[in-house]
Length: 300
Figure 1 (tube, rainbow, N blue to C red):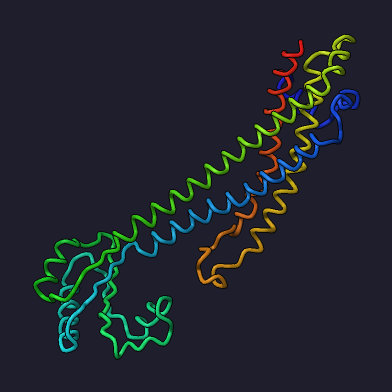
Figure 2 (cartoon, rainbow, N blue to C red; figure 1 turned 180 degrees about the horizontal axis):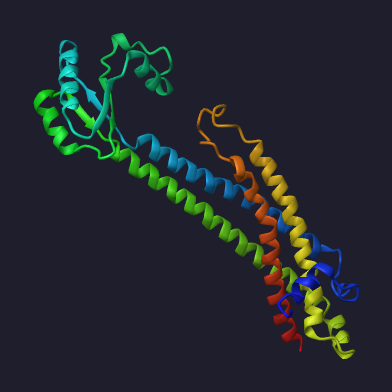
């Protein structure tokens, strides 16, 4: 029962104890504004963290179990070496499929850099062969040696040098998002602690009078905890709503040309920001309770 008493007091409240805390003023506005601003930033940090995770998964799935062979040779040797490469690939264990890319497919690959009107017929564009691995995969080094013997102009790219740094960058970006959320929570706790300490100091005379008439420190602290927790909760609700609206207004991946990589929430992920206001209330509850009892000990 003792465990639930602070929660019960927080929900039910006490009109007499609530008079100890000033209901308005700079401290009240500071607490609400701080909670709203931190919740707003937390929504974007959470969106960034989730988007980084989706980005890492997308990069891994797009590059996994695939490889590319680039054939650079004189025009008269391209077709001959392409047939030789396909013959080597058909006899290589671990390769499920190998096909040459058409001119139209190569034009689509180069369009983001050179535009859609690239004259491939007049440019020495290498022939590309797309490889799909089977579950076991293939021996990349052994394949390179066979290609060097059969088709000197063929170069194997197993995407390792692309996959690892991109996935590592996405993982670090996700970690930075989580660190940002932790720093936001710590900053919120620090600001609310300062606001609660200032409110306690401003009401030191009232606190002394309450003690003289028999009020316990737990009774006085409860008033501050409830008031500041509710202020933080209200501010976090506003900040979270504004943050969700801001994320919803971001352009989608297709309209942004893939630049934003789908920054935002998808499906049930839109429910995750709703956790921020209760967490802000918990942070405010713990920070204010700690600050209140510490300040009351100093006033003794």
